[in-house]
Image (cartoon, rainbow, N blue to C red; front, side):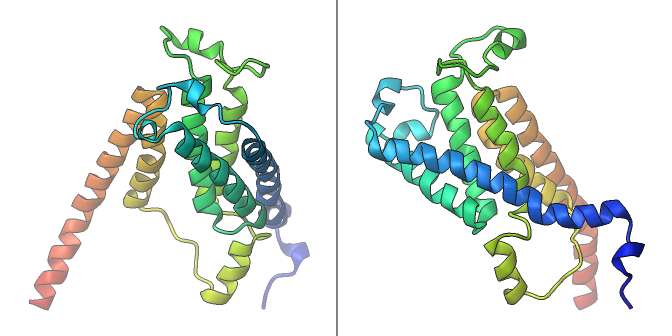
Length: 226
C-alpha cells in the first residue's frame, strides 16, 4: 500500500515538483541563450579570424572557418537538444566545453599575476575581454544538467520509461567520481591549470583506489572459478 501524499513529508513532495520544474527552467533559459547566439553567428560575419591564436589546443588546430561552423551548429543543435530535453547530458557537457573555450579565447586575460587581478574580469559589460561573469554563470547552470540530466519534463525521461524498467537509485563509486573529475578537469585546465590539474590528479587517485579496492574481490572470484 502506497502512502498518501498527505503522509509524505512536505519537502519530499516539493522535491517531486522540483524534478519536473527546476531542470526544465534551466534548459529553457540556456536553450534560448545558445540558440540566440547560434542564430547570430549563422546570419553574421565570421570574426573568429580576429582572435588569432587565442583558441586553446586542440581547438587551435581548426581554422577560423571550421571553428565558426562548429561553434554555430553546436550552439543551435545543443540549444535545441536542451529545449527538448533530448540527450541532455551530452548536449550540456558539449556546451560546457564550448563555453570554456569561449572564455579562454574571448574573455580570459592573457596574463594575470594574482587571483585578485583575475577577479576584476568577473563583470558584465559591453567589453568582451575580461568580461567572463555571464559565461561563468552558464557553466554553473549547465553543470546540474550534465550530471543529473534533463529532469522529468524531458524527452529523455519519456524515452527512459519505455526502454528500461525502474531501478533503484545507484550510488556513485570511486570510478564514477573519477570519470566526472576527469571530464570536467580537462576543460578546466585550459583556464586554471592548477585547478584542472587538481581535478585530474583527484581522478587518477580515485580510479587507482577503486581498482585496488576491487582487486581482492576479483582474485577471489577467479579462485572460486578455478
